Image (tube, rainbow, N blue to C red; front, side, top):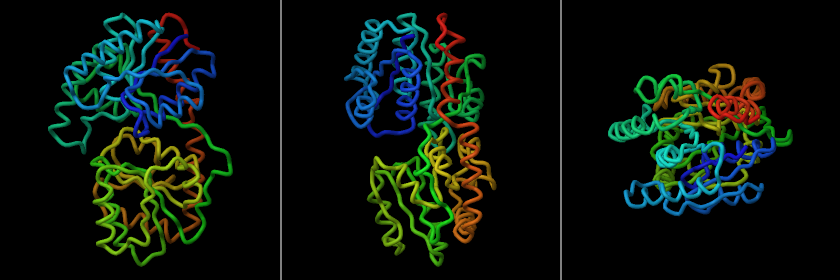
Length: 369
């Protein structure tokens, strides 16, 4: 089976890139031929090269809307797909999803779109939500199937009238496992917290900082992994509240698994999400998770069992939940163990691959297993 993946950008590496990398590698291990089309060179393409996945560049595939370059990108995608002659085309990220569906439909190739969180979800600015919903309404009929990475996103699409119910399928994300020496020891005191998130409008570092200010009398340190346009603003905010010695800005890192293994709890304070892989990575590492109750997060985090869910923007509740974990190392261990069990039963790459292949089989004449 020949499969072509299409994704917009190589940088920064986010959930969509990790999903494409892991799914591609798993499919290749089962004997399928995989080629990834991507807009630019970067960390993602370096990863593909390292693990032996073939990729091609689509130079005009960029994130901003540009009518001229977008049409050029459609023809570049179309030419590459026509040459490769795959059995199916699977598109990832919004821009690649729109343009790829047009190109695939024009060639009569079964085309799939995986929505890694809708841009018209709650928490996104209202005008942006409206524009993206209209764009998805236009593109939805062009896909043989639309795969959402959470039940929340499937239900949101149906509520907004995006896509045919029979063509919308939820396949929950999964991540590769790590060796035991990368499992955390959440019972260690004083605890170290970690949050892996880009400094942009989507993530809510300001609520995290307000919560940490409320519990400054407790012993803790926080590692913030990630970069982005709002990083300098966040660093200034931390200095102003006098927590600069306890909140560490680590920037982009390639050793996140190692950093998690040295932590005692994981945080994801955010305004909106699809189904974040970082939470699965934390559960994989035996870390208890405190996360904002947005998008499909509650499909991963069992509140009160593997961690805590906190209302969006609620720094008071966040501080209370943090305090519970910081004061009780046995609770951290218990929740971390429960998270690891939940990961093994539901969120491995094997689970994701088998469910994805089942969706492909519904459309493609030649079985992909």
